[in-house]
Length: 490
Ligand code: CTP
Image (tube, helix red, strand yellow):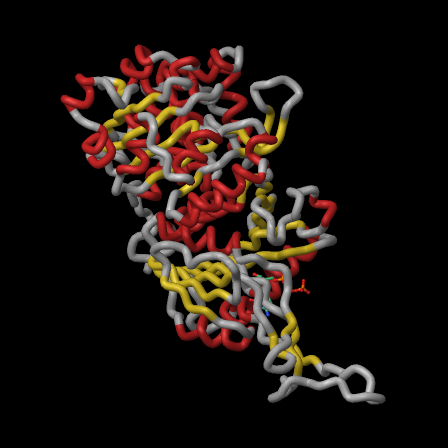
């Protein structure tokens, strides 16, 4: 096996490696070895350090000639300069997570954004204006009634001279103020005076996050067009407290900023990708139908993630309660046959991703009128016939896209079933997920919930991904698709 000479790495990678090694109390050689092992095993690096690790990994593993495609692409996608020329107004609320805002400023600036900061009085109890000012290289705004600040910039200009407002950490109080239209300090006034998009990264104790008042405010702000990132699940700063309420990691916030500002590289530009999502509804009569528990969250997230990488995404979705993803051309269907027709009309395409939970059967003849109860006749007998398998149809189509990705939702024998589906349906990749209750995912499980744990099955083998949000699965799958399509010439 080749050996790595740390001295030969470029300065940036060396620097990152040194920092990571110091944080983990390891030697640089040991840190490098662990990261390469993780890459070879296809493991995700620990959350929060993705950017450094992926970039370092990319360089390190290219020395070894061995790298996981998704990680390598993600590394390229996290390239610098993606926010160049963008102006961010960061509002730091008062919470222990305020210290992460320092890292956030650095991350935004290293991507070329200019960052102006407003700090609430409570935020100043956690981090100083001095350190924030040093990192942002700008004056830090703290007071609505500061004569100098108002004279120099003024809260209206402050709120408008930005491309995006980011609130991190967004405390329960800041959320409540904006949801109810308060404007009694600089942060709330700026938020209400702006005509620019607002991104909130909530951080609070899990009980505060789950309180009905916070839930109400979150829903109101969502309806008002505020975008949210997080909070994540995990340990709280207080001992013995865990749950949902941790602020999203700075890199996750940066990724959302890039998405909102439509920044970032577009490795899928010029590629047409068809995605199916949601359940299908198979009618029994005009008022009744057969359906399943699919929410469309994973399929819609994949469509959005592919669009963010520049693909021309055509989403065909069954009936769902969520909004059409931004920047995606969406066709709404009800039945499996309609979904099949819509998909086939969209061919040719460079890739197709089949996430929909298509009903396997439909009633042979749905009744034209509502079926009535007739005394003495008992319940109707429904004769079912098989629906077309849309994935298998496209997998063996004469206009088969260069890359065909299917899903395998299983409650038992996950791997055996996934491998069988790969072969039978003519797919290149199967994303296998355990939808049984035993999967242990989330209070509501994979179907309908926000989290997922998948394995990527291909002819080359199986890659296991750790449990993550459906958005994270989507981003990673989109990176993997971009990597695969690179080798497929149009
Ligand atoms: N699929 C499809 N059309 C169907 C059934 C499934 O396109 N009529 C696709 C799904 O979108 C998914 C994959 O096939 O990508 C596997 O779906 P799944 O429900 O797991 O498998 P089935 O083929 O329905 O087999 P079974 O229900 O027996 O597990």
